[in-house]
Image 1 (cartoon, rainbow, N blue to C red):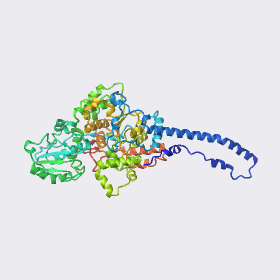
Image 2 (cartoon, helix red, strand yellow):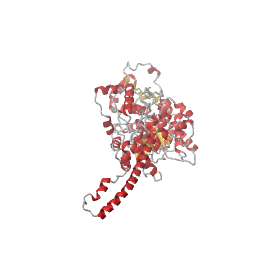
Image 3 (cartoon, rainbow, N blue to C red):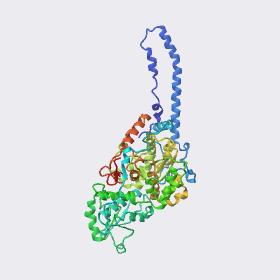
Image 4 (tube, one colour):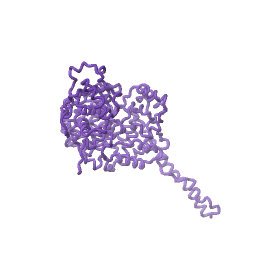
Length: 592
C-alpha cells in the first residue's frame, strides 16, 4: 500500500482557481473598448492580492498537515500510553512489553507508518467530532440479537459410563487452540463411550509456556460439571500407565486423523483401537472434529464444555476481576458473562468499585506480532529494511516457507493485500475505529503480544486514542509477577478483558482468540455486547484509494462495511460453534 504523505496537502485542499482561466476572460476581444481594458487593468492590479491570500491559505494547510504527519510518526512527540485510574510503576512504563522486541526483525530500526494522509484527516475529524454525539449503534448490537439466550446447559440424556476405555489427548498450540481441543475431546469421549483423562498440553517453542490444564482451568469443577455427560479422571489407571502406547498402536497423531474429521471416522478408526487396547492417546489434537454434520446433542455438549465447564483458576479470576474493575469502574451488579469468567471474584469487584465512577471501554485485539507479519508475506511500508528483517525471521522460524519461495512462485505482496490476506497494521485498525465513530476520548484496552515495530508502529493509535491501556499498565509489577513467562495465562487475562468489554474490535477475523471472544460475547451478552469484525478484503479495497479519498467518503464506506458484519444471523453450515453459537444446538431463540 503506497505511502501518500508527499501529496497530502494538495489532496486535502479545495480546487484552486486557475490563473489562465482568469486571464482569459477577455482573450478573444482584440477590439474591446478602452473602458473594458481599464476594467481588466484594475482586476489585474487586484489579482496579486487574491493570489497572495490563496498562497497563504495553501501554506497554512501544508504546514498543519506536515505538523500532524510529524506528530504521528515521532514517538517523542506523543503522550505515553497512560493509565486512567491506577498510578503505579507499571503505568509509568507505558506499554513497555509492546516494545520489548528481541531477536531478528523485532523493531531494531524505526518503522515507517503507512497511510499518514488519512491519519492526519482522521485526527482532524476526531477533534471536530468530540463535542458531537456518537453514532447510536456504536455500542449496541442489532435489536434481534436479544432474541437469543444461552441454553446449552440443558441435557436430555443419561450420563455415559465410559466403559469402552480411556481417551488421552496432548493438545498443541496456545490457550485458544487448546480450549478447542479440550471440548472436541469431551465430545469424542461421549461419542465413543470412553472415559476422558484430563488433557495434557504440549510444550511449544513458539509459546514457551509449561502451563498444564490445572494451571489454567479448575480441574475439579470441570470434572463435576460434566459428570452428567461423560466420566473424567485425572490419571490413567495404574495398570495402564506402563503400556508402550506406540508399540501397541494406541498412539494417534494428526496425520492419522484429518482436520475436521466427521464423527463416523472416529467410530470407524479409533473405536476399534480403544476396544482392543483400552486406551488411545491423541497427540497434537487440534481442529480434528467437524462442525457439521454432527448429532444435535453432541454439538450441544461441545457448547456446554466451552461456555460452562471451563472455569479459570482462582489466580486468573482474581487478577481478571482487577482488570475489569479498573476498566469499568463501578458496576451495580456483575453481568452473566462476568459471573462465568470471574466466579465469586465478580461480586467482590463490584463491591470494591468506586460508586462515583463508571465508564465504558473498547477492547482491541491487535494481531500484529512478528510471527504473524513474517508469515503473511505482506509488505507494510518499511522498505528494504523491513523486507530484510522479515526474511531473516522467516529463515529462522519458518524455514519451510523460505524453501518454498525458492521453488514456487508465491502471490505478490500487493495481491495478498488486495485479497485481504494481510494482518491489519495498527494504523489501519485505528483508521477503522475513527471512521465508525469512536471518539478521541474513548477508553481503549489493547490485547495482544509484542507489536512488530514497537513504539513507532503504535504511534498512530496512541496519538488518536491517548486513553490507551493494557494489562501491563493496569496491573502493578507484583500483580503481574505470578504470570511472568506463562504466555497462556497472560492470554487468559486478555481474554477476560476483551470478553467483558462494552465493545470489542478484532483486526484478524481468522484469529482463534478473537473467534472465542466473539462467541463468548454472543453467548452471554444478551444482545448488548457488539463485536466489530472487519471484512479485510473490502477494507483493503477502500484503503487502496488512500491517496485521493477524502475523509467523509472513507468514513461512509467503512461504516457501511462494519454495519453489514454486525448483522445477526444463525451459524452458517460448517462454521465454528465456538465463534457462532447463535444456533439451536447451542442457544435458544425467543419470539419477543
